[in-house]
Length: 493
Image (cartoon, rainbow, N blue to C red):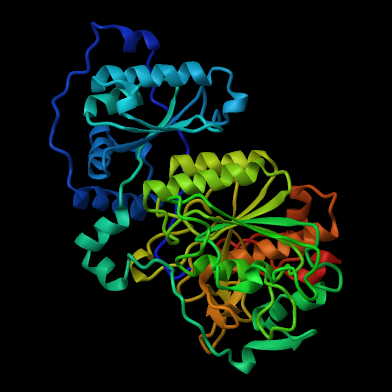
């Protein structure tokens, strides 16, 4: 995930006041509409919080700070409501409609507009909505409501602003997207050949994956991939997905970002799909970890940094739809943000509540974001954070990988030569390399599919336990690298 993407767990604490307070016309919020803070001031505070506290959360900031970021972010606001911090699921929230109406009435009162002029989206599965808000008084009133879980800027472009104001960020490529359409001639040292004519990436051998295939190839397990889509030009992730030794399986592709289809317009998602489940056939190209697993790929973002409202909404949608898909057991996402996003957190919690095993990238970045630990949503307790390490190690992170106490597993993806993991290219008949915590995450999702396919009646927790027992540091946990590398043969025996 060659990118600047990043951390943070979010816990929704609520300021409270009674409905009577809000409805009492004699109680007025006394404030003047001050000038909003500049984007530079907002970013400086975000960076300071992460460096000092290890995290940034909008809920810890003043009304004026939050409103300023809303103002600088196209005045778009994401609101999570509910009777408690865990009241995110509409189907389990009998009062959700009443609470939503109350929230809308408060906005209507302080904005002086009908809801059709400010309501952008009301989520059908989650207690979450997106609105347009002009006034700071509205933000203050909402944050005082007892049934509000969060009020956040929905379209604040942190990285775009950082590139404008931070010379180090600009020079280090903080706007880097993780995208690329290159193809490479693979070094013969970076793979071995297997029947009927596929290439096994060197990293797979380091984790005993080829030996594990004697016990499990992922058949019968469906993995959900949330990324930038899959290349329409790569037939091995299309019409030839069910081919050769990879038989009796399916690949499905959905586009939930900007209504422009499921096709990868970045290149990142194609590589993640490849390392998870590329077919084992006679094409002479790299095979995936779980080469008999089913794959459902969602195009949910333009690139791996979830910066915009449309990307964050699409990722939320992908998590909820995969959560509702009873065939899906595992979800892999190698994208994220420097701080938590309420609507994405709701989507992750929703999928987790449906029994999904969720793997997210711990973070990959340049020197500018080296101060960031494990990124969001890998930092969430509902997800399992993965990072990449150097060959023959379990505690030496790759040159651009993040580490930290929230990491659960590691995957060897960087050689002393500097080469990373061979995968399918965006273009048909060609290969490429991919590194970072991105490929480590996708590979680990594939490993989980091998374990689950070997034990189809197991629960999510049983699969995780087996993966841990087969890892370097079990029964202990390394302070920055979790359980370490997984011996996949041991995990499937």
